[in-house]
Length: 294
Image (cartoon, rainbow, N blue to C red):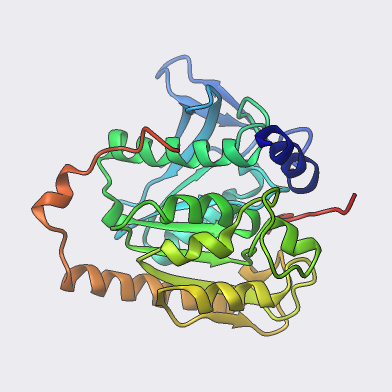
């Protein structure tokens, strides 16, 4: 049954750019990993992280010396990190945050094959890297999921109870619901966000375009309705599925959200017990989404 679900997901949901838009090499002098094929960035760390599945996923950490929080950015299903560089630089500059981005297994220079389960293992490995390499606590993290990236985002967010916040950008209720307006959840469905959103305890910001022809705005509205801790949503008038970043209200509303999360953090500092939080080790401008019917 698990294999069938994985096959459905792969056929409907994953379209990694081919060839990849970047490569990874090791600097001979420093021994550090670096991007090839894109403009280098001095304040970007490149990682190859081994996941629970045994795959090595590429992750980039965009550092801001005065960062208030760290975003874990899960991109759409038809892009890789090489196409997202400019957006990450803009988010870091305008929001004053670190940005931890990663390519799913089978995307870009990441090894393995894309699958729903692998994306869950991918984001867990990225989270653990932030904890071990940079000492960043979940209270200092905001999870950001774009389109299909809302799946791994809500998977992790539903398991972490002290996250600072979640951003759902053109998010989906589930994979099958993008294709068909079903009212029940089938066992073979993928990214069952409609169920996981109910277990997220931190503030949730939903951003969706009113003219989204790929993922209907009703997905965003329902996710917002089901959120326990709702933040003022952003319904981008006239916005489609892959162009919301081009609207001025996008970055303005994101900044307002980050400012609100900073105020919340100052008013509710973490307890001493929260400092001893373990890593997760066990589990029971871009083309951002494409789905196709069989």
